[in-house]
Image (cartoon, rainbow, N blue to C red; front, side, top):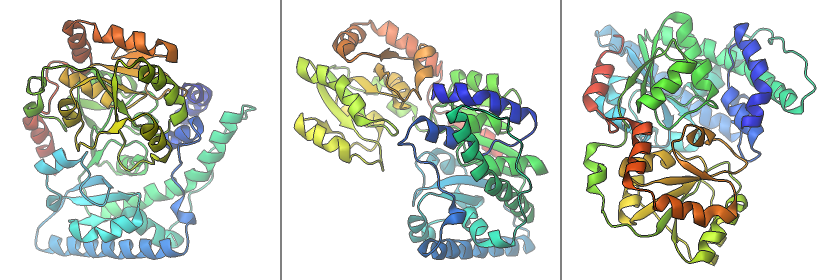
Amino acid sequence: MTRVKKAITPYLDELHAEGVPLFRVQTIAAALSNSSAKQQPNRASREGALWLLHFCLAFLSLCTIAKIMLYRIFHRSFPTVHFLIDQGRADYRSEPIINILPLSQTINFYHSGNLRRSLSSSWQKSNAIYFESLFYTMSPFLGSAGPLPHFPSSNERIVLEFIRLFEENFPRSVRMSDFLRRLLTLLSIKSVLLIDDGRSTNELIYGCKKIGIQTTSYMHNRFNEFHYGLFYFPVDRALVWSPYFATLLQKRTPSCSTVVTGHLRIGRETSPSSLPSSKKTNILWLGESNVTAEEIFCYLMPLIDSNLYTIIYRGKPNSNQSNISAFLEQHGITSDLSLRFQESLATKNISLVLGTHSTALLECYLFQVPSLMIRCSYDYGIHMVRDNLTWSCSEPNLMVSEISKILDFPSSEIEARRMRIWGDNPFINVEVVRHEIKNLAR
């Protein structure tokens, strides 16, 4: 991703300086960085059965809008929109916020990655508006996006491909943002609360800025310089996990104020002192997206051949692991099926976490477990090494020696890394979060 960033940054800076909204840049950059990173398809080009799914979700959304307008007659208002990722159930990354601000008290804009799952679970949701389906069905009646921005010429293949994808997505994003602005106005929204997924929130934040609606985001995973959506579409206020992330965000978006909340999904009841003190040579290997499995296998083989460590695999939920299953079976590697990452660390007596870019490479330090980042061609996690948050290995033949060195470090070294990442108050501060939610514009 560093190579792509270096190539497209001059063009992004020039367009940004000219006031061009850089919609979907984060998704496009991921697609250019790795052939396995799938770009979100343009829903406006879908036909057939998907049209019926969009229509059904749009109808349900219109029913919600009608209900809200009716409530207004009886002086009951819903001044806040909550933007959520629809996973067919409550998104576990949003649950800490929902526990404080129930979905029954907000209008809920759902971004759907699976229309069938969204429809089948729609009866479980309160005040749900599937804004993408509304836009899809109403798109023929909406205005045009206007002319495309002017792009500087280039002979570099990556830049030309970036321009092509940006031009392809730009008109729809402009029209979507204008549609959302009108919808927010119709609903008399005063504030928008959203998960900080910079791939999906660009159009909503841009529409809010146009009409002066306050935006507040909450952190769901680590971020770095590749999260263009967070930086080109800054919110007014961001709830972040630690001082490290607050500083990282403020350096790039000075206009955004930050509030440190601690890790939203981890409380003090699972503090390091609650985990077993015994240490075995068990290594937790993290399954991650956008990485070629074969590239990782060569780093694992020296560990397997050494007979010094037991490798346990923890796959990424909802990811395709077909190319990994044969490797696990061949080498007798067991899979961990714990629901929560901290359960994996505790029940498996993990000594070290191994991966390429997962947030879990930082989360393990909350429980005094170190991590090692494999330096592969997908360098999405490079900031973790650059900022001395964790250790890394760039050569398969160095794996055994690097892990042995890490495991020999005194606990004070692990604690120093934990402090650098998480600071003095690493776990969720419910009172701080509740205070910020209470202060949303009303």
